[in-house]
Image 1 (cartoon, rainbow, N blue to C red):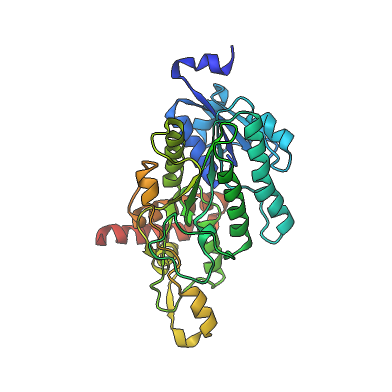
Image 2: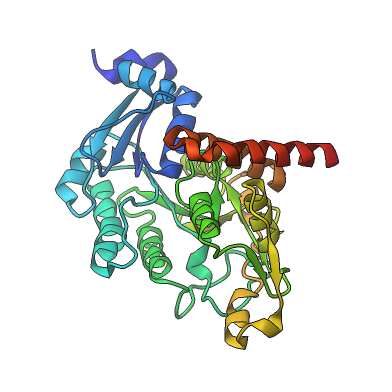
Length: 361
């Protein structure tokens, strides 16, 4: 009996989550499995799947054949075709193992990888391809973005190499929309954080430990958009449904995904680091070179995701920036304690700060 026969009563759809073992990929896989009407293929660069004891839902899905794991090499189109064959939907999440100091490898994985995924989708007659991009693709690192929307063009030069490569990959994916029956769209979250985060929170934690993130530079009023991970994966589900039912024209378009709650960047960082027990200090303008303040103190993001809310029917499921930040931080600290008991005192201090926050509202 085939997998499709076993789950025929649910009328399941087969999807592939490329990058399914990354931060957002794991969250999306779990959400798809909980929906109950998907057969999920997890595709990632590791040759074998190593489960954590907390991944009981995935373990059950693997044993019942509702989920399966595939090694994927984004530089090898033939390998990708084998993974995608028979699927109707591909969620193209973040690429793992990217070394920001190695342009050649980054280009092969992100840009050439996108070309190979597109070609494989067309060959396998995949119906829908949703790409997880980034809001950084429209940011040049110099000019403010206030109330930005999807009409923003790609800048002549992006803030960094990865943003430039992501912009190229996104453009390629959107350009092939409605060719060979493939519908595509792209989602642009900004500064993603949440349970299972292994990059965003850890980066600032490491910076704080070495004394690099303890100072508020400039006025401290530069705004940024942040997106909770579960809101991002919810948006991917909304995008797939919108492409599937074609009730509105979302195909071939990109959409910003936010919590709809811009926050001062330094306030966000203060909540994060003070929760970890690090004290914050202010560093005024006159103590820094003008060129450094000019870059750091900009109002970087003010993204309006109205298009995603009207066309994708996306509404952030989890609101309240402070609440979700503390929840995310708590889970991350518990993860650190499993790795090393050194972090136990930090976790206890976090609980004290969290209780004070709850009391003061």
